[in-house]
Image (cartoon, rainbow, N blue to C red; front, side, top):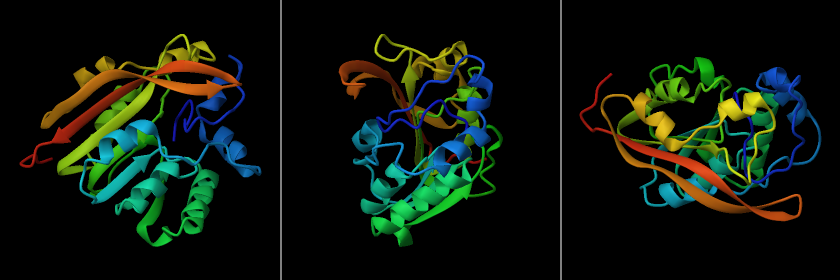
Length: 228
């Protein structure tokens, strides 16, 4: 998946401005996930737990799943979960982590780039993505693609980083990739009701410092009589 970071409070080096273009492409993430050791905590993202805990389990698609923390959590809550990412190595890690967690039977994986995502007729009760940041402000277009995978009556949950004092962008390209929840509103497709569009502060520990960062959260529900 095209991303500035799969969050999960993982630690990673920031790229230079010169490296930013390659950082948004799959080879950089294949290399990152080719080594040993976990890059992310493995814990589910805060806003996923806050919102999805209220939904009855069904089918879920997590786009930009990285090492699978959110997919595993969803499966543990009774969802049949699909993790999607553009990194084959990341998906291999996620599949292994799901097996280790005992939920391998409740998950599957899908290698796809969010920028060209096509649901191919598949629909899910929940489509979610966390900290997926396409370059050049491309999240609105990606949101439209992901919305096509939401079943009637289902939910679309998008969470991203907002520029803040605690989360400074590493490069200009990263700055342009970050977004506010309000930035997404013009692109919400017809047939969806926006339930949440807000900024939520969150406290994390980065390099030994406790800082407050800002999550951009959009939750929308597709009408039950919505048709493509």
